[in-house]
Length: 255
Ligand code: ADP
Ligand code: MG
Image (cartoon, rainbow, N blue to C red; front, side):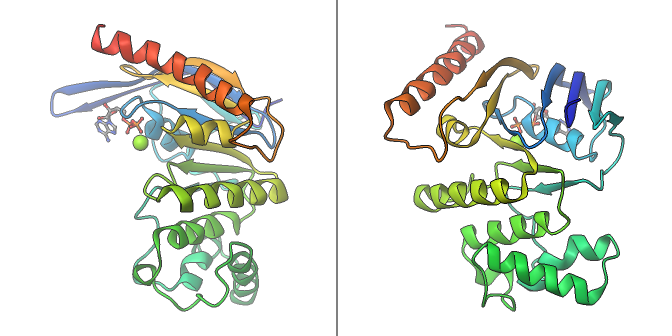
């Protein structure tokens, strides 16, 4: 059995007479401990799919199962990291990191202990009493990741968490995330529109094509970890994935 199994998931948004067919018959699975990247151009339904996996949106067709059980609402075993606005601006780093535990009824002493452990692990010791606006973009995302991990999720859902970061910070964050993933062995579904990021992170890349969002292909990345961008095989893999995406883009613009 897989940790996560999506079968023919479809979603149509209807709003003020307008209909957007966001997802059409999306199927794939994620094994226990696997790192999956959802890759596709803007508007192909990646965020919609992630929201469905988080139980924040409902699919109107198909099924999502986690460990065999249908996901119909927010799953206690899943945690989400968003691109931005994920932190409460009026709460300190410490309070933000404690939030998911507090929401699950974890006691104050245990919350404090676990929060400090994760703040330390993401390299933010000493910043506990700072507010989000006093932190850099990379530090804010680390707070989000620490908060997501405190409940030891089996499934970590990440929606373009590094999309707003500069290239150097982004690459540091990618390596740090992989270290945490290897330490906690959560299954990760990570949304990105960067081919480089997907090849650096993923065990398998689920490439989505737009209008409506479908699974274009699923590409296993069989490169040893830690991955080296200077390795010619890395560039070769990026080239293969880009070729698949470009084919979609050509069809989209009718070229
Ligand atoms: P991505 O994350 O890949 O950029 P989204 O899942 O955000 O794609 O969006 C997929 C499509 O669904 C887009 O055409 C978008 O405009 C539409 N969409 C997303 N959310 C909503 C919503 N809440 N109401 C109406 N349409 C939406
Ligand atoms: Mg999105």
